[in-house]
Length: 231
Image 1: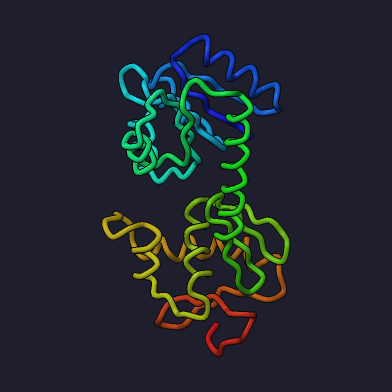
Image 2: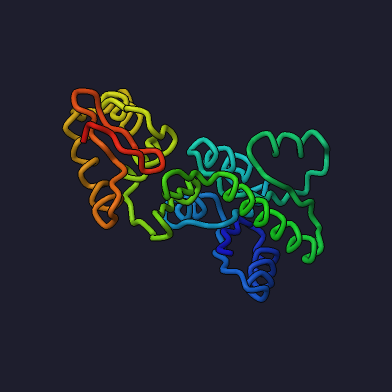
């Protein structure tokens, strides 16, 4: 796993980073909240380990900020706060687990393993499939008939919208509002442009074409390759 450790205690941070690396993990260590925020913006991680009592912005506030950004990366809080109210507050803020200091390193490893297993289970449950398409929204991975598709974020959003509404005619206005948002300063031509790009990746390499134009109404993703009169 790639882990971001945020811990201001130099001795404890060094020990945790060293032992996690010994256990086979890739670990970046930030000693204050500003450094952590730089890592959040610069790289993707499989797990955040946040010390609750950081100088400046606390680990709890970092947790809250990431959840407000729709960052679903598992978060393990390290805290000296053992009171039930504090632990509940941490979980309600968005933390997935907590570990009270001092702790045994074996317990830290066990909790990391449990969080990784929970993440993998959620990823499997969140997969969306139809007509040979398989999407994993958590990681924005997509494939058709076992062939991996390289999509931009916008293309993935559009394809996910189709996959979640198979056989339904989606107007260009609905697509625009879903993919770009109600306040987006773009025209309906942007929808057609992304549809063309998506077709090159989803349809052109395959004999059966899934994304169909419905004249005067919009676009439809074929369910199980059924044919339409409109093309």
